[in-house]
Length: 316
Ligand code: RIB
Image 1 (cartoon, rainbow, N blue to C red):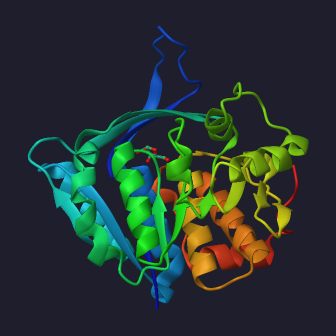
Image 2: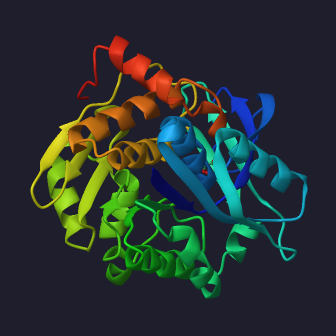
Image 3: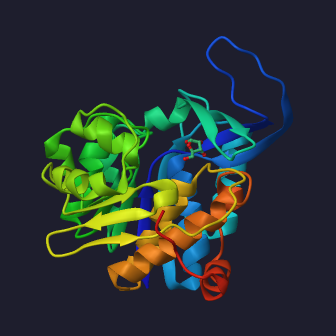
């Protein structure tokens, strides 16, 4: 059975629906409030377990505090089928939280207080070796300390796993770190930050050049995620578009996390890249039609049903 490991953050999301997001200095009245399990790492683990069913084992590596949110977040992952034995509690910090506004268009704004996620230190990386043992994929994001991510990427490679890095939240990364990435999955603004370019709307015609420029920084393959325009894949031998699935968005939170989880699940089943991207686009599309992070992750059966009914992904 394939093993997928996720190294990253666990946050309790405090979500408020608003007609529109506030501009700096402004107060807006929201409609309703929900607490929903989140965190980019935990979202990937939860979605991977739901999408894999009994075809993969999913393990989470992360840190929480000693508080009620920690219990809730671990229980949410366990209920989805994730092994949380490498999610340890620290006395030094509270569990991570995220304050999220979601406007009617589905667009969001997120502020994260990382808390215990920052207690996953590089000095503990060696303790991850047994967790990585036998893993086909190890998934990363950037809500953990950067030196921890860099050291764990290296360790995952040493253990024979393929690494997938979602470079979110956006920040510049060293070429040394990117050299240990097999698949890099930025959106347009993250790609711009990694390349030191002004953040501007990326058109379909820019995508091949951007993906190639990113590959020159180290990753073997790049999936450039362009929301409604779909995604562009580039490696040494293959370049292709995979169109987005047309849906009416309710909440885009964790769509990227669901995409990465689905990509790992599909590639873990040795599907061809075109098929894996189609599966990932469909899983992400379903997730944006629902509120919340982990609450929005679809099951395998839902994605299969969606793909069989849908007219198929469309290029934007
Ligand atoms: O990617 C979405 C996630 O970003 C949210 O669940 C929030 O916790 C932040 O980490």
